[in-house]
Length: 241
Image 1 (cartoon, rainbow, N blue to C red):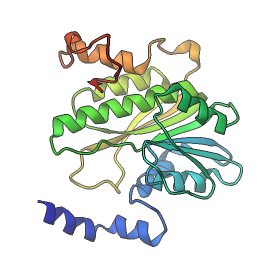
Image 2 (tube, rainbow, N blue to C red):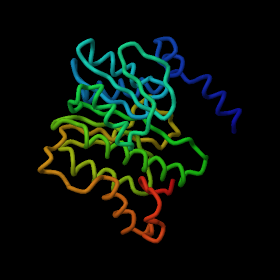
Image 3 (cartoon, rainbow, N blue to C red):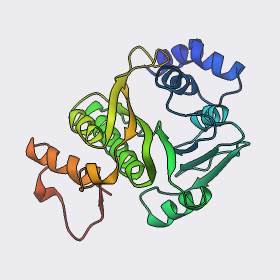
Image 4 (cartoon, rainbow, N blue to C red):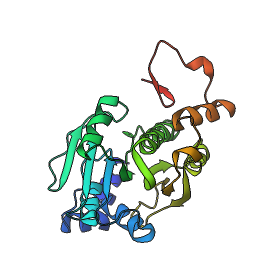
């Protein structure tokens, strides 16, 4: 299995094209295809890239927003410097990290939040899909806190249990929500991107956080038991940390 994956990886045309064009990851072409179809970012926009390592999406965002824009990238891992981007190491669920992110944009709300964040795959689909749902929900939770009205959001998710709850949470906060599978995605991948535009004003959205809303939904369909949660522990998303 590992040998076959390596051979396919080496033959991957998107990987070769990314290398030839100076992008750090083949995933850069996924964002380019999303941008071409939905026009999420514009010249002069401020953009936050959640889970930016190794920097492919950050590079594309810089190209789109130009010299007059602002691109901030955050990840738990250190990302090599990218000209034109402010990169930081931190957990976006930490209020101090969020304060640093907003400071990089002079305290202003962002025009767009992008996230290609992905779990370290275990090979167990149910586990990987659950962690991916948690990460996507986390990105949405941050997005609704820092996006300006009318702002856009895109995140990756894996098809499976709970994704409809994530779509519903997005629709409660954005007037335009679509699922999109870029042609740069691998054929065998179950990933899909949720593309959201036109963030609704605060007065017209659900007051609960996306994390709380989706956690309640998972409990209602029997995926998450209230007995699993411990008030003594910090719970982010749907797994104990």
